Length: 614
Image 1 (cartoon, one colour):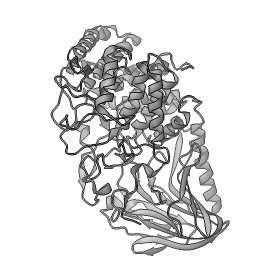
Image 2 (spheres, one colour):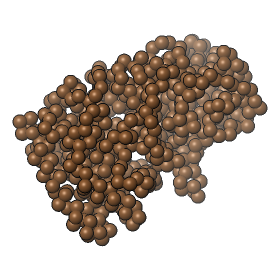
Image 3 (cartoon, helix red, strand yellow):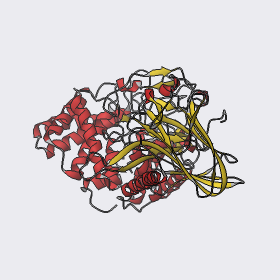
Image 4 (cartoon, one colour):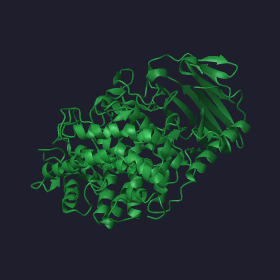
C-alpha cells in the first residue's frame, strides 16, 4: 500500500445494480457501500489511504496487473505476471438473470462480491486482507468467526472462502502459496445470506451466470454505427448505475471525488438527477432496452405524483432526498476536503427539471403509447406550475450556490416543458390546457430571444443581463428551441468553443473567474458539455469537425474505457466516477454523428415511434 492516490479514471467499476465496487490498478477494492449504492461505505480507501479500509489481493512479485473487462460484461480480469508464475483474478458483483415471471427484477443481485483467483502457470504467493472500516471509517470492525465464515454483523457482511483466513489486527487475512492449476475464491456477502459453502463448482457457476447475464443484456442492442464499441460500454455503465429496486439512475456511485485536487468542490453524486431524463429514456429504447426505459419513466412519474407543485432537481435512488453532511473521519481524495454525504441541491430550485421530465414523458408516449391518464394528470400539475412560475429566477442546472438568477437554459427548458405539455394535452384530448399554455410557451420563447441573446457577445449568455457564456446553451438546438443551423445557435457554439474551450476538444461549463458560483477554486472541463459540443456541431452541419472531437474524446477515456465527470488538458480526470451523464452524452453524440441531419437523431427517432433507421 502506498500513500499515492491512483488516477480517478484508472479504477475498475463493478456493479450488481444494487451497489458498486471500485477496483484500483493494483487490484485492491477501495470503494464499496452497503446495502445499496447510497449506503455507508465499508471500504473507502479511495478517500483516505489510512482510515478508509480496503479489500486487497497481493501477488508477490507483481503489483501492476494488466486489466480488462471480459467482453460485454462488468467482470474485471486482472492478469498478474511474476518471475515465478502467472495469475488471473476475476472480480465481479454476482448477478443472474431474473426469471420470466420477475418482470420487475430483470437482473437479480446475489449481493455477493466475488474475487476468483486462477494460477495459470508456475507458483505464486497470494496475500488477501479484508480491512473493512464500516460507516465511512467511523466504526471499529468487530469480526467474529461463525459456521458460515467470518461475520461483521454491524455492517451485514459475511466473508466466505476456500482459503484459511484468520484474524490479524482486526482484519481477516490469509497468506498462501498456490501452484499451476489451483483456483481460490474469496466472496464477501452483504445484506443477505452468504453461501453455506464456497467450492470451485459454485465459484464457476457464479462466474458463468454473471458473464451470461451481462452478455445477455448487452446482446439486446443491434447498434453498429459510429463509436459502437464505446456506445456498448457506455450502455453497460448506465445499466450498472441503474438501481434495480426503483429504476433510478445514479449520477455516479461515489461521493466527494474532487473537481479540483485539494479543493472544496466535492459532492455526493449517489443520487438521481432529472437532467437529460428524456435523453436517457430514448437512448435505452434505441439500444433495445425498453424494459429499463419503462422502469425509469415510472420512477419519474412516481416522483411527480408524490410532489405537490414543485419538482426537486434530484432524488434519492428510492425516491427521497438526504441532508448534506461533512464526514470528518475521511481525509478526502488527494486531501480534497470536505468529504460530503447527502446533497444540498435537493432543496434548490432548478426549473430546467420541469422540461426534462415532460420531455421524457412525451418521448415515452411517442415510443409506447402507454402513458396513462392518471400519469398525465400528475404531469399536468407541473406544467401548470411551470407556466405560473417561469418569470422567477432559479439556481440553474449547475446548482450554483449563490443568489438565484434568470438562467437562459432554465428558461429554455421551461419552454420545453410547455411545448411538450401542449403536445401531450393534444394527445389526451385536453384542449383547454393546450389552449391555455400556448401563449405562455410563445412568450417564453420570445423572452429568451430578446433577453437571452447578446448581440455584442454574439451568443446566448448564461443569464439575463450577463455576458458570461455557459455550456448548457449547447442544448438549445438539441431540444428543438431553435434549429441547429440558426445563425444565433452557430455563433453561440463558436463563442463557447473560443471562450470555454480547453485544448482541441474540451469545454468548461462556465468560466469560474467570470461567474461567482459561491465556491473557491477552479475545476476541469466538463465531459458532458464536451460531448454535447459534438452533437451541436452535427446539427450545425459541421459533421467532420464533430467527428474529430468525438474521436479525440473517446481516445481520452480511462484505461478501461470509463469516464469521470471532468477532464483537464493534461489528461487528469476529476469529479465523481464513473459519471452516468458523460456516458449518456457520448451515446447521444455517437448517434447524432451516425444519423447526421438537422434534427437531434434520438428525438427524431422517438417521434417516428422508434421505427428503424437513423
